[in-house]
Amino acid sequence: MGYFRHLAPGSLEANFHGERCRRRRCG
Image (tube, rainbow, N blue to C red; front, top):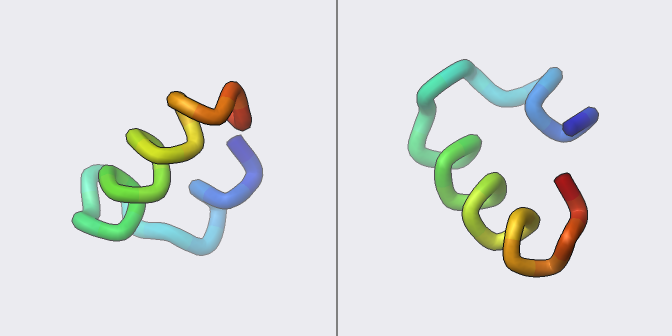
């Protein structure tokens, strides 16, 4: 969850990357 550092909490980017990363077992 290091990529969330430079992303705003609840932002579209964070949501998008979070969802994609979650499927790839990144988070």
